[in-house]
Length: 238
Image (cartoon, rainbow, N blue to C red):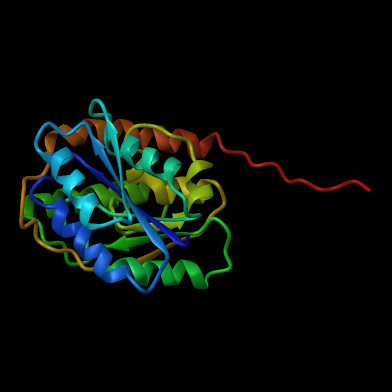
């Protein structure tokens, strides 16, 4: 199997069926793949809708958290269960365009760099002005603090190897700092411009204020990890 697509969802009953269909339409006949949707303790009808989807899409696998553990935990559960050595992640709200999965995959496939992360760059974000402005400020602060040279670290659309992810420190909200964490491990990060679509269904699960202080604490934590990273230089003695 060439690719596992991991989708974390929480109360995305209005979006997930269409998204799964779009992914299959893009990947069928092009890659040997599977889709793992990780339901992070949804309280709406998402579990039932996913069961119906599985009957229509045999490449779909469903994992479920008994309680909401957060997006990073959901992504981690999907990657640990993946059958493929390469992973694509995208958000479950339908704003990431599944057509971009193959574009990012091909960049990774052509690279000889071990530990590479290919991440999307939502240059033309289709969100409200407040969300766009706050995201721009957050990206500037993050890039200045961590030096990861990534314009859109929090884009949900990413492609990387399973081993690369599993070697990273695991913590809540770590998905927003994957470029810096991969670079800390000696990996390369490439940003590729991707399509960002307006949210057509459902509502955002994140607010501006409920992410602000948590984001600051997480940022300082990742910076601490960077400063404590001292990889050894190894030479073999004959």
